[in-house]
Image (tube, rainbow, N blue to C red; front, side, top):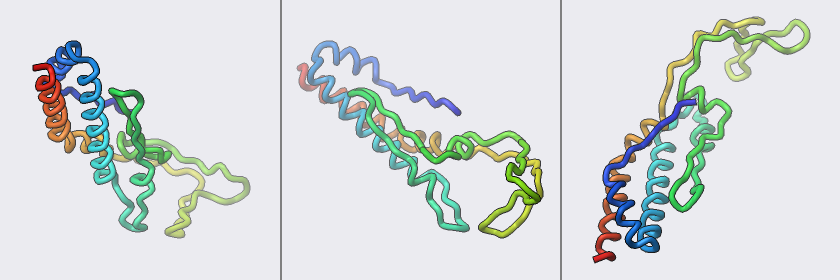
Length: 155
């Protein structure tokens, strides 16, 4: 699974202001965090690929976000294959695990593949990274606004 780190400018000033006015700062930072999470979640829903042949949006529908504390949150795609879509896969072998004379079979296309397939792997489709990139301007505005509100209250 890939790891994405988001760096926000102005965060040092925000922490300094928070030390001076903890109750107001905590409220503003928490609100900015929650709204930032919401922006990333919405953009994740837009960026997640959809199966154009079937119109399926299972990956998109599996994306959930929640606050884990007042100042942090998590967004997860719960579809079993979400990491493979986001990060891609290396070439691998797929073997038929059933009993008898059967083989690998695509129920939707009615296509058979035999008992062993040498899958070439898949390219990454980093929809979470794109969602974060699309959200960065909004996040920066939210952090700036939180800092301004804190500084306004301190003065």
